[in-house]
Image (cartoon, rainbow, N blue to C red):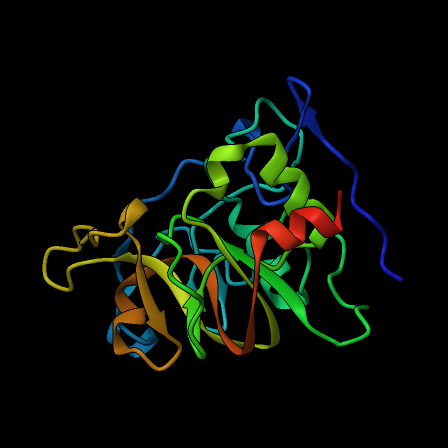
Length: 219
Ligand SMILES: [Zn+2]
């Protein structure tokens, strides 16, 4: 059984595990051109081999000092999001979502106008416990508008969501998605010109979960 991370609250509300704190925000270096003999694409001038790249992909810089400063409830801490996706940790409490008898993980995706989760669909949202999802829905009723949930048998690694840069000018090329991020599979050549912000998985073996039933079960 893995340890349950500390519970942080802010103004009486639970702060989600993946929410960043102001003390974790780092100044972002301007990406520079990386010589072709080193792989091409973009790099940080003072790039650190161990911290700035994962599997060859350049990542946003963010600290890991949970509780430092004030929480940014609408944001995501890159390091904890990535860890939660990789190890199936609940995005609210940070504890494992393994351990259900049916072996599934619950995913709750917001702002979808009720559109159900499709097989193979990509998401940057980590799984969540039933109790944690219900608590969040009760504390912030607006989360419920358009939200959908599914039990997922197999969340599989797919790629990242990141900021693509223009190969000529190196200027950021924001997408129309919130935050300007672009979803890219691990096979995309554009990864060379991208600073990754979030890990993305593909969801397989999805069974829809009714939110009313979820709330009733955990009442
Ligand atoms: Zn939880």
